[in-house]
Amino acid sequence: MYQIIDGKAISTSLKEELKEKVTALKEQGIEPCLAVILVGEDPASTVYVNNKKKACEFIGIKSLSYELPETTTQDELLALIEKLNADDSVNGILVQLPLPKHIDEDAVIGAISPLKDVDGFHPQSVGSLCIGRKGFVSCTPAGIIELLKRSNVEIEGKECVIIGRSNIVGKPMALLMLRENATVTVCHSRTKNLKEVAKRADILIVAIGKPKMITAEYVKEGAVVIDVGIHRLEGKKLCGDVDFDDVAPHTSAITPVPGGVGPMTIAMLMKNCVDSVIFE
Ligand code: GUN
Image 1 (cartoon, helix red, strand yellow):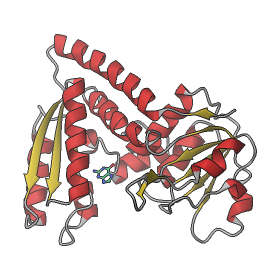
Image 2 (image 1 turned 135 degrees about the vertical axis):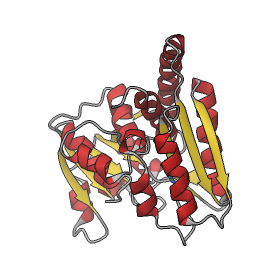
Image 3 (image 1 turned 90 degrees about the vertical axis):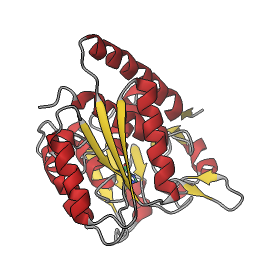
């Protein structure tokens, strides 16, 4: 029988722990504060930003909300980031992506102080992760490490195969698994013999953005499978990149969609916000 890794329950425990930490910080007169910037009215981004603000409220983190019109110029956005960088009462700055097409995302991410980069997207944060220095880590891959550890999945010495090489998930995931002493393989759209490579994995992490692409043929008997994908099927049901019903019986543990990796992303953002108070 396989274990279903309950991301919802694990994220709730983490948020409860953070709430206690924030209460203790407030007793010392310290109030963590996150600035959340949304440009435009993309419906999905609006939902994500509202969920982030709600999580802040639950934990006791102050959130400042900047909801800017679609027509905001890059210079206006950069000026706001400059102001927040210089504001000592703000610990974290989050700019929700994607940004409107007339704004250069790299320029915006690069303008956020690495000391306040709670998304972990700044090149300095990514570089620090790569060479084992202190810095913020991208929330989804950091959440996956937390899920594995809190589910007692051993990582050290294990064969880990990651499918997907995005800057936000695949690449930082590979660096984190390496930091945990796994043997890491990163696969992508040009990988040859993907099924055979995936089948080597003791821990298979899938972030490819294709609904139910990973079937039992890609999975070694007894592997741990982590599904980062989330898709809405016709009829509104959600599914991941992994065909759960086909794959689950062959695993020792697997994350469901919804209720697996998803809830961990916001919980880790909250952890980064709390950590940002003491980050120097
Ligand atoms: N858009 C989709 N995911 C994310 C995320 O994790 N952070 C930010 N800032 N924008 C996103």
